[in-house]
Length: 376
Image 1: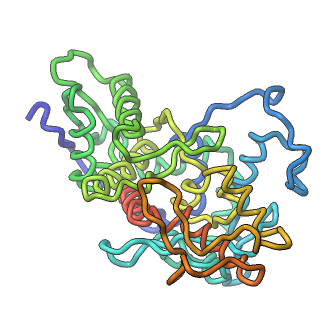
Image 2: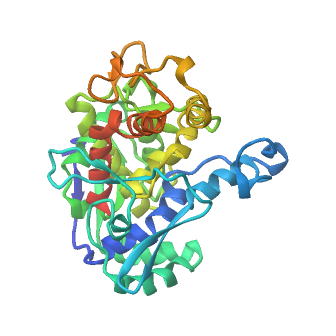
């Protein structure tokens, strides 16, 4: 039916198998960076150096290059039968990893980084040690060859099968969200053909690109309430903590599916996620250093509290109110009556990091993760 906003396909036979988790480790970070979360680059001449920041071994890097370094800070290595995390530059002791909940109705949970977590994906799947060598070989390839390898496993060739979606331009957001959430997983792995009701253009790629552009711009539109712009200078997006009603949660799952489908369709989306959201989707460790990408001012405050000699004069409690519309949240039971002291300031900083980066957006993050890995 024209304009019904459902995917139609002539075939759906997608080879997945073990490649899913293998892809998560070796290729998804590269594909997301290049295709899904592109960011505008600036000339090094216009990107100031960091002579006065506490960056240790990274002193002298431009801000853009520093951010790229932190993106690839963590890697997995396998020694014998044991997977371990390797980190450069070195991170603070309190690092965390998001693991998806076992049941669909539950939210994901945050675990403190340990040796055991290196052997798990964001979905909680165990990693066989024999993947280590082929994974290392694959990671050493240029991006173009990595991506070609990925598509050979995930995408059905265009002439063999495709998914057609007929939409009305005026209702493209609602129809697309419905189609993405109701489509069979196999359909999402097919290359896409878009047709717009009342328009005669034949989709040779241009209409599909326009669909991705229009839909993603609608998704990040402030009026939708799904994502908010961070206070970081790069103007990247983070999950809106206020978007917790059932309609929003369904839309997050559709957005996750769209991200996966963009990789299949080789589409560059006109927005980018902030680094910690990126890392949590990929199952990479996050820490206090990632707060800088949400709000540099909050990051400076937390590091000051962590490093100062006496916090008693700050009159802090284990509670937080980051928005006038949101009531004060206790970071521990009875937190508004628990003062921050030199003895417990490390715990306070740790609880703040967990809350700001994860706990206040856990339901939304679960649906994003679920949607992304429905496709990949």
